[in-house]
Every structure is written in structure tokens, then in C-alpha cells.
Image (cartoon, rainbow, N blue to C red):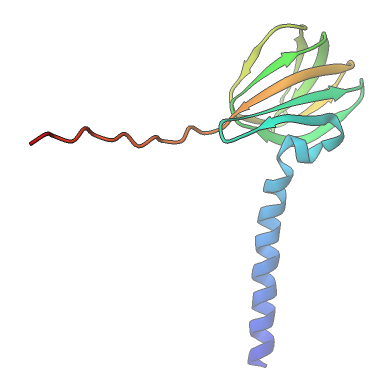
Length: 134
């Protein structure tokens, strides 16, 4: 009986960890809508990808760190925030749009194509203090 309870408790912990981990992994826009994204560069400082969508395409709720969007063509998109508020945006080809870290879902109201540059956290560089001469 004790072994069964330990097994049951272990399965519960595993299920709980999976329930927490799965939504976190699904929040990456490239994971949420892989057909719309093509990663061009991914290193320890930035991730750059192209988003190509048709009018009517959608992206489920996802999260971005601070990022820059550079539309490659004029487009209109509708963002829905986690609180349910919506905002439509007209994006003009050639502009650069700074967007603070946020979660949102997206509905493409027109065909769209853009480059997205996500900034990754800066690593602290160790600075070596000069040694004193004797």
C-alpha cells in the first residue's frame, strides 16, 4: 500500500511539472506558429526571424522579450493582450518598431511579412581589476 501511495504521489508531481512546463514552452512564438516563422539567426545575444503570414492567419498567446519589428511590406495586425484588450496596428514597410517585453496573440488582418529581432538578456562581463605593481 505504501509503494502504491509513493507511486501515486510521484505521478502527481510529474503531472504537475509537465503542466507547468508545457505552457511555458508553448509561449515561444516560433513554437506556437512554426509555419509562420523562419529563424535566420539565434545566438546568445539575439534571435532574428522572419514572419510571413496571410490575411486571416492567427498566432496563439505567446511571449516576446524586448524586440524590434521591421515590416517588409505594409500590413495591418490585431494584437490581443492577456487581459483581453485588443489593439490594431498599421505597420509600414521599412520602419523599425521597438516593442517592450510582452505577451499577446495576433490576428493578421492583411498579408504580412516582417523581420523580428529579439534581444536576449545581457550577460554580466567580469572585469579584471588591474594588479598593483610592487
